[in-house]
Image 1 (tube, rainbow, N blue to C red):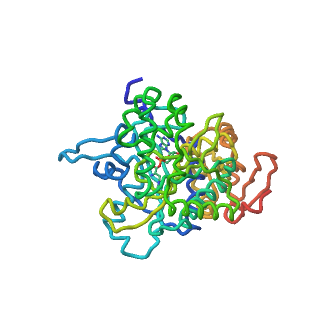
Image 2 (cartoon, helix red, strand yellow):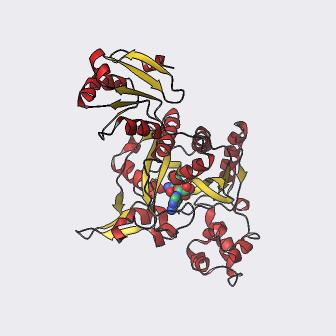
Image 3 (cartoon, protein in one colour):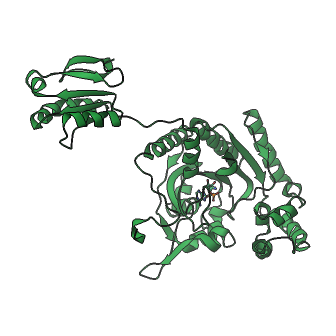
Length: 417
Ligand code: HAM
């Protein structure tokens, strides 16, 4: 097969046999988002490269290694968005939305692009649902977005998720921990992996979630960030925990969660689901109180998260508790007079919301009925010369083979057994 007949590595087609799952996931999520009164924002697929360097961060893997960056025909440096937060903030600042009513509660569903090493649950084009709550600095806001995440998983029928939270401190206190960590790691340089060795100066915290065995060994004994954050950050986390406890939301505090993007302060969190023995992070988020200001907007606190939709669909595939919609009525016709006679009936039933199919392949009656069976039609009807003449036809229940005669122009599918 030629190269162009194969999608690029890391991309995925959603075929018709699977697309109902996506629709279910998106509709379910949109419903929950609207009960929290979040409003949708739609942003471009590409932005100036600089935006991501300044937000996601120069020292993150995403910016260092994974961005799809190119020069356009006018030599502008452009990047396909690796995530949704940066573009959302660019848009919010550009359109002055922070001068209006606060809090600003936004959500998006969009494609993201990261040049990742491929493994389970990792793609180069993937999709996120993201929510951003701009304005409040309060732990209530952290609770509100985490709560929305929980509600989304519940509504999707995913109950076995694990919520992990942490605080990575604020700009006032996190440098103290970074310094401590750097000293600790520097004394153990021979045990940590080459990537972390490189990160040591710029972003020592990333070592905490490195998958390398050597690094993980070192990490078991490293100083814990929660011991060195300031009182304000500690109190913030305590309040969040109080809210989660009050609402009986189960969670663990995992001091090793640092997140892969550079903009977080204070609260960070992840939702994890175990799938076929491996742990899959299906949602990640946290607070980013300095980012809006750093990007040139007014000083505004914010917190948000994003859910990876491919991972959700993978999990639902395992649970297999959602079903595709089926054809309600298949209409078999023997000639074009039958087709014409059926038009008003088809129009009426479709306008009532029923899923109707009628032969489009000029097949024999026998093959039409075979087809109706294969597509799982609930009912079928044959329009022959008698039906054309009288305007009455037999409607057949495909699973019981029961038949009932009806008037083609007036019958109600609701009243058929
Ligand atoms: P993130 O942790 O980079 O955060 O991505 C969020 C989720 O997107 C992940 O938990 C995962 O489910 C999914 N995801 C990430 N990379 C891939 C990939 N290569 N293939 C498939 N799924 C993937 C963010 O993007 C932040 N913008 C979240 C946020 C919003 N924080 C505050 N507001």
